Amino acid sequence: MKRITLYSLISFLPPFIFSIALFYFFVFWGIFIEKMSMLSKYSVSFGTLFSLVFAQAPYITSMTIPIASMSGAFFSFKKLMNSGEWKAFLAAGWSPFSLIAPLLKFSIIIAIFHFCFSEFLAAPSYARYNKIYREDFRKKPEESVYIVENPVFKNGDVFFLASLYDGRIKSFFNLSGEKYLEDAPVYAIYALSAVYENGLWILKDGLEVKYENSNPIYQKHFELKKYPDLPPPSDLVFGKKDIETMDFFSLGERILKLKKLGLKQKNELIFFWSKLSSPVSSFVMILGAAVASMLPWISGGMLGAGVSLFFGFLFWNFSLTFQRMAEIETISPFWGAFATPIIFAAVFIILLKRMRIF
Image (cartoon, rainbow, N blue to C red; front, side):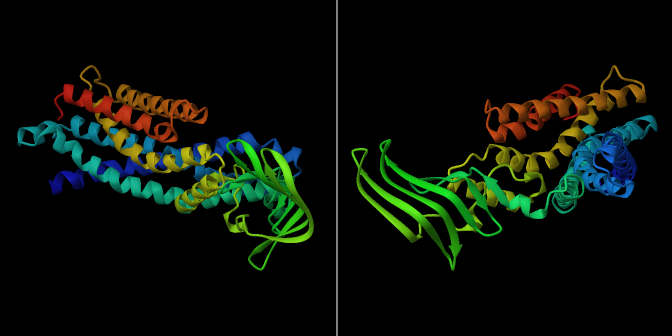
């Protein structure tokens, strides 16, 4: 088994690495061509444009790792067959599955590599891309990311609305909070501003109202009021703030904060589950490569390579389709991320069983 594993890896790694390098080149060149119009539109230098493209390319390249796995696996299996070694191993008593098992096991290492690549290279690079685009192209200062217009959230039973939140000074403006019981208001508070100081929110120039049977029974104006029912700034998350730049654990923390604030987590959940489903896809693509290389009606290597690429692009299109279905809430975010690998893995396993590989 060690001999087969070593042989499989030696024949798999060169096309796998070459495919990643080739995809990176095409991704880089495609992004560069796409963004060349920015040279005149934003009056930036070639160096700044190259910096932008270099920062975005790793994020897109990470999506091609499963296709590279399929490419490497296909050429590895085809090399075994074309050299006659596949028949030799079978004649020596090896089962067909034992010949593809080493690469299926190696897909675990690829999945770990894919996850680490996405977390420690692609995500930080995409954050750098956003920073370059925001500051060097759009000429927006770094501070602009901390300003949120019309934030809406809840904390416990109190629903809040403000005209503006400025994260730089930890302040709300034109803040209102209302508490309801069986769809009827029981309490409300309004303030021109709220500032977070010494671990407490201080509401300024406001009005406090209590209701009974939807009618106000108590009103009190105040100049300053300590208000403990607002969450601290560290727990405030608003909108779709560059979730592509967040690592797995930061994204999970953001989802919990959004849930606590009563805000939608749909996009975050889709991206969260995709961070797990994408590395798993390499296992599915290796199964697809085995199918493409062993189909009885495919004799030529080029035809088999075309079929494997067709599987890869079909997989990609299915992934986009299910992701879109999750975005419009037709299916859950989990199935938006995992439906494609589960369906394709089941189809490939059925085909391999019919070809008596298992």
